Amino acid sequence: VVAVDSGYELSIGGNGGIHVRVTDFLCHVNTEAEVLEYAGAYMQLYREEARYLERTAPWVERVGLAHVKSALVDDEAGRKKLYARFIASQEALQEDPWAERAQGVKDTHEFTPLKIVA
Image 1 (tube, rainbow, N blue to C red):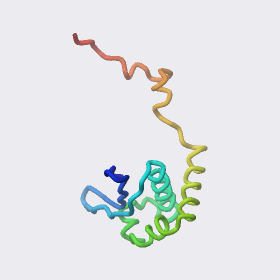
Image 2 (image 1 turned 60 degrees about the vertical axis):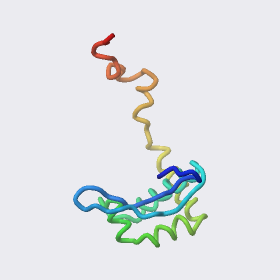
Image 3 (image 1 turned 45 degrees about the vertical axis):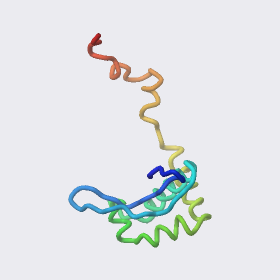
Image 4 (image 1 turned 90 degrees about the horizontal axis):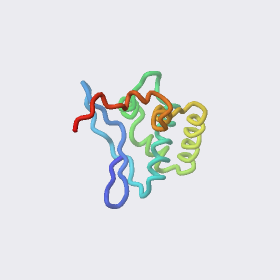
């Protein structure tokens, strides 16, 4: 996700490491809500179609950018359904690992300075 003057540009399928792969431009969106919808729908499409332990870059290479664009950009109703399934999958299992720390309930010692330097 890259913020630009006119909204956001979404790119997918990039990879670092030994097998470097440049990202593919997916689409341009106008709002943060659209960014979240496209990102969630992308993750759900990947979850439903990728092979076990297949990373996103090889998955995009295998299925093709046209397939992903067709499912997310060209099919608004399908994208919304994918996003709804992603949200449903996260509601029961998603836990914010920082929530208790931010509220000062858990592991507060992690944020205590060892020594205050004046």
